[in-house]
Image (tube, rainbow, N blue to C red):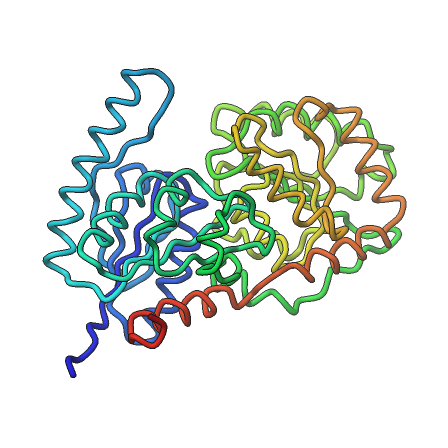
Length: 370
């Protein structure tokens, strides 16, 4: 019997939401003694996420099937070029499994592997099946889901699906058992605000003004951390200073896990990685889903926590200073709501998702699950 090649390719890119679970799985596989190669497109490096030590990165072409004939032609050309590059790379590396994390940048490596019968796994981080994963699913050996009620999965493909959860960074998993911070009558109220992996202007435009509308007794207790775009930074800092609110505003934070753990309330988008991290850490959230996805993926992600009582959702068209201020004021006036929401969010968390996905991948690599 031939020895199993302890070499696995992970294919991800396009957004930080695809890269984060890939990196988490890479940590797990590396700790099991596997050699891990990461295939990504050129956009993958723009998110500033540190690649795990010992992981070899390969960059290939990719494309998205945008609107319009010209955009679609360019996208198909990029995917075709990436498919050729992926076939050459896979022929050289001879991996035992190729794992994809959704998005068109993952498509070439997965399709190339499927064409030569190398076992494949796709991971779906959002609560609705993405277009690339939907195209790959019929020929994929195993489908790993983050949420049990994932929408868009065909019945014929569902029989090969397993709920593993969405892998989060090790420093986030380590916070699973850390209790919700006490919210005393006169103690600090810590808010953590982000606008997604590339920032979103609407949070810079709305949040400072919303907090400025709160009573003076509440404003003196606020301790705000807000991530925003570089072009919004000075405006946001000035607004908080004028309102007399203590705030730390930056374009990027290296200690997100610590700030999230210390927060009494999170405000931000509801991408898959964000929602998964909120659930694992167990912090209440006000989500403002990105409104322009055709499949409403961020809204469906947010609903996974909101249904359990772990979050509140404000549609972007309703996200005004007055609406947000009223919501935050009501929650601060009733700290038990925040505590119960934190526990509800934690009940949805899967801190061992990377291990679960690692078990699925290594079983396939070893031939135990074919």
